[in-house]
Every structure is written in structure tokens, then in C-alpha cells.
Length: 250
Ligand code: AMP
Image 1 (tube, helix red, strand yellow):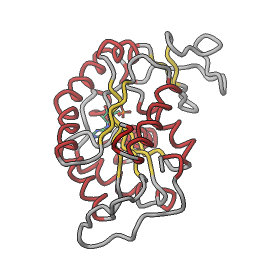
Image 2 (tube, helix red, strand yellow):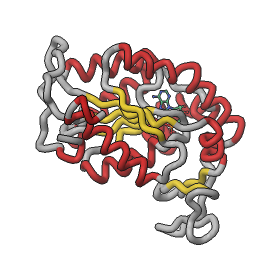
Image 3 (tube, protein in one colour):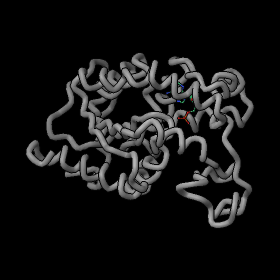
């Protein structure tokens, strides 16, 4: 049984004490892990389209608050625009609130969370207390590829579609294929901010991977350096299905 085969809701009601994951329970939470520019957002969209579960992107949620100009948005804008991470308390609360929504009851794809050891610990406790088993997909991408992707990235300010001037240009120069809006460079894709985001990844986020492995969580490595998104997507599906099926096909 693989990630394509999710059935009806399988989440149990929250329990006061953490429960050990039940052997044989199918995957119903996917954690996409990787550096900025590793393709988490793109893969999250492909997965959610196929599984009909929501993409939970902390970056998108934070940008939405900034766009609305509310108190939370104003509080986090400076850190976001400088490339530094927002506090654990803020993102933990945002994620908990989002995962409690009914559309996440069948499962969800986490994109950009957890990014610190404290967030990873928070998430593991949250999942365990509900008997939810996750699979962590590490999108491994070469550093130079990441730089090329981030510096060439353009986004439609209206619908959010991502392009790359080299690897995925729009049909008409600098205009969104879907709604014709003029594409923009996201604030945090400017060069000095990219440097800070990658430093934050190395310093605070990369150690999370080791933490998750040592904690015995299921971590699947997927090489996402050179292949187009649909090939990476197939690799994710295969890796997850193999992981679910048996030891000997890994
Ligand atoms: P992203 O779109 O995932 O690259 O996130 C953009 C920015 O949002 C990051 O550079 C951080 O400032 C902030 N952010 C997103 N997710 C998190 C997180 N899990 N923890 C802390 N800050 C985050």
C-alpha cells in the first residue's frame, strides 16, 4: 500500500498520552524536507493534487499574514524579508491551528516545517499523540543547483505559480501562463536574502534530518538535483510505496 492508496480518514481523536505508532498503519502525513530551492513547493502541489489532501506550507501561511497586514504579519515581516527564521512558537502555533482544520483530517503534506530541532520535537510529539505515522521525504539537491534555481525563480503575484527563467520559463516572456500577470521576483529571492536563507538552512535546519533519523522516524532520501519535477514526483511515489511494501525492495 503506497501514498496513492490513502483511504478514508484514519486519524484517531487526540489522546492525552502519546501513543506508539501502530504497525501497518498507512502513511497519512508527508513531511517534505530540503533546502530552499529543493523543490518542496512544487512536489507538495503534485502530491496534494494526487492525494487530495492539503499542502501546509509555513512560508505561504506567513506570507499570507504579511499580505493581509495583520498583527502577526507585521510581527514576522522583517525576519521573513531578511531570510532569517521566524520564532518556533509562531510557526508551531500556525501549523497546529492549520492541521486541526477538517480538510487535514485525511492527511496533509508539510512543506517547510519543521525547520529547527524544537519544531521537529514539537511535530513528533503532535503526531505521536494522535497515532499519526509520517514519512519524511528528503529532497537532496546539489548546492550549485539550488543557487541557480533560487536566483532564476519568478512567481506570479496573483496565482502563485512558480517559474524559472532557465529551467521553466513562461510561454510569453515574464508573463504568467495561467493569468497573464507580470511575474515578479519574490522579496526573499534577492541575492543577499538567498545567502541568509541558505545559512539558516545549514545552521538550523539541516541538523533536523539527523535528529529525525536518530529518533527512528521514516526518512526517505530522494535525489532531486537534475530530474524534472514529474520524474522527482515518481521517485517520491516509488520510494514511499517501496517503503510501505517490504524491506527487500528498498
Ligand atoms: P519558504 O517559502 O518555505 O522558503 O519560507 C520563507 C520564509 O518563511 C523563511 O525564510 C522563514 O523566514 C519563514 N519560515 C517558513 N517556514 C518556517 C519555519 N518552519 N520556521 C521558521 N521560519 C519559517
